[in-house]
Amino acid sequence: MPLDLGEITLQLEQRAQSLGQTKAGRDQRLQALLETANHVDPATVRDSTESAFDRPYLAAVAEEGLLGSQTPPPAPDDWQVAAVDGSHIDVDRHLPVACFLINLGGCVLTYGANPNADFFSRSQLATEPSDLSIADPGNTSQEEQVSGQLLGLMRTVGELERLAQVVSDLPPELPTLALVDGSLVLWGLSGQGYKPFVRDAIIRDRLLPAMEKLREMAQTRSVALAAYVSLPRSTEVVNAVRCCICPHDINHCRQSCGSRRSTATTCDIANEFLDRDLFQNLLPSGWRSPVYRTNSSVPREHYGKEQQVYFYYLQSEEEIGRVEIPAWVALDEKLLGLSHSLILDQCQRGQGYPVAISESHEQAVIHTSDRRVFKQMVSEALERQGLFSYTSEKDRSKRSPWV
Image 1 (spheres, rainbow, N blue to C red):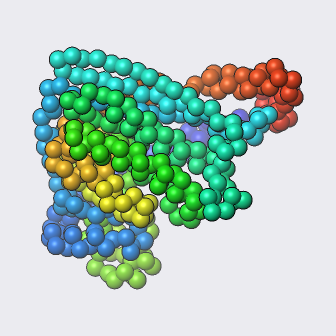
Image 2 (cartoon, one colour; image 1 turned 120 degrees about the vertical axis):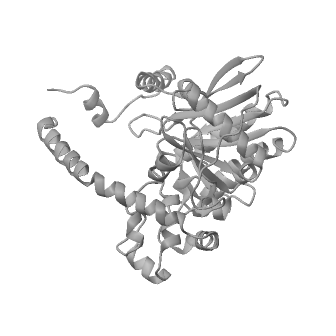
Image 3 (tube, helix red, strand yellow; image 1 turned 90 degrees about the horizontal axis):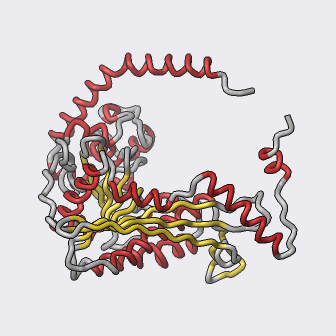
């Protein structure tokens, strides 16, 4: 039976009415939270957020103060931005052969006296057993198949590797913004989901060398690495405020608090707010928030000092975006300012979203029609070699319904 759209419409209307009725109270609570945060002294902010990793929620370390705003510095007259994005076709158990495809696309946009635009894309097909899994160097019988979330992590790392390669080939005299979509934090590697050899193969062997290559370039030229998160749903700053105003000991906190809610006063004043709710009220157009350091266990434990992930929020007029940067950018005033001014410029040119990322996405995207053609190409390649090409009956029935 198809969707009952009438019933769904009724449920949506009821939910919208409920949200409308609670908006006034929510706005009052947000203003109270902001006022409370503004009265927290700097020593409490420093001590509370530095030790926040013991709490049952993820709270950022406040590096430039708990809340506030910073004006954008002027952008240079001549500069360039390199961006890379990716998409992939996952391993499909309905296909007759195990494989996956990663397509990386990107662009280099040059502004100033000699404007230019270069676009590129490159596809990588993985079919060999060594490419389809990650093996434990200490025990070759242990391996992890590359698919699903793990393939997404591999693609993210590939984007940074490609970005480092592209930047190394650019004219060194121009200030350069190296930009990717999404996060520098490999959130999928947190917890116990993957064994240590998988984490090492992704972070130690691939991610960190790519980021270190960019850091080394920044020693002799002006290069700022950044990742842009559109419409972020993070609560790290809200939780930093929460831990600064918390009057309870850590044991009480662990019993009363979750990642987004607390059942204890005064902490419950922060319930259900996102970071962007705070900065929508605090940031003038074009300004950024203070810089924070994420307390995520992945970078904290595995990225090393130079590549720790910092972030700030940017008011681009259209939305509050989250900009993530490594330590070597965050702690360098010139590179931090460069990331701020150039990402703001990109957002203004892209109607609220960095234009270089939009163009990179166009080079990288794999459309639905491309995916169908890819499956057909796999089958035809096998048949040309006299190999039996088959699929599951489930897949066949979806493509050829009998009613």
